Length: 78
Image (cartoon, rainbow, N blue to C red; front, side, top):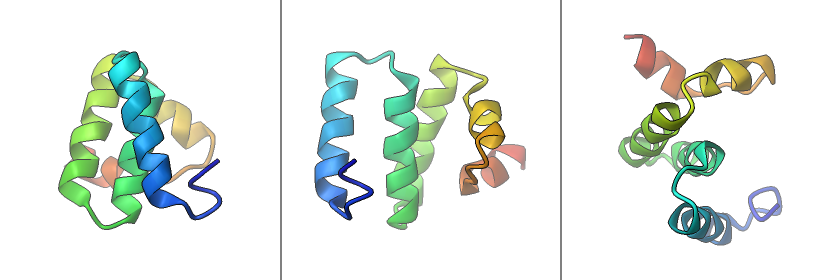
């Protein structure tokens, strides 16, 4: 919700809080990674997206099915 309103910092704070409260929520890692990716912070984005896939390996397939694209897919396939 914060991200859609353009409140990037607030969105990152919320995702980080969610991760701290419940570190097994793959979607929180993935979404934080997406925000970081869109902000050009690719190294950090990769870390969070990789962690999301460790928790939920089929997450990329699920996001592809939802027509969400990511540079991560390109990195991961190389």
